[in-house]
Length: 269
Image 1 (tube, rainbow, N blue to C red):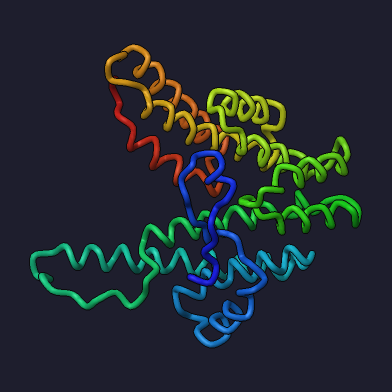
Image 2 (cartoon, helix red, strand yellow):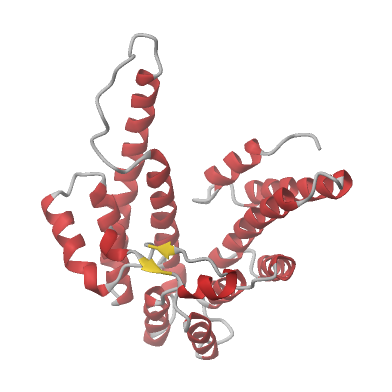
């Protein structure tokens, strides 16, 4: 994993704080992940390897192979999370004051975050976004390969959007990626809401509402306690957005996380 850590130069320019990211599979590390997958294929770490290999394959246009690998990884992640939940219950009983150290660095939170990435990538390369001619598939492969932390990312998105037609199934995903780059949170909220309203029946429109829900939670948390009415209003907006998502997309891969976010919000003001 250390071989994939890179400084986020774009975030440094915007926030003047140096962050590192690891959620982009660089070519330089591909052989390491292939080896981990081949030699330790049942380990929890190999789930991460599967995501990275699948993203490489999707970037090459090998969507069916990538989808098969992601399906396998999803099943492994779900099973591992169940196992960790059982181990946590056992360790919390009075009769288990001591327990063996973890056999993997893949904690519950890391696995949950990885599971989100698995679901997101599989959703992106679904048949819905592969529809169309060879050029549409080529655009999808190019979109998968883009590094969202690159200084050229915004320009690359504009180039892709210019090359797409009115009915291009990837259009909503490109617009979503652009909206997520907006620094002004109020403007970002407006763009996400607009995208969801226009494309509510697409995967990009669904994820726009998911992102809007996360943003609304953040805006509520930022509200000062000195203005209780404004904070109460922000909380109501966050709850309404999350509730709307669950109603519209109960079977979405995001639904479980949205329900958890909603349950964690206070019920009052």
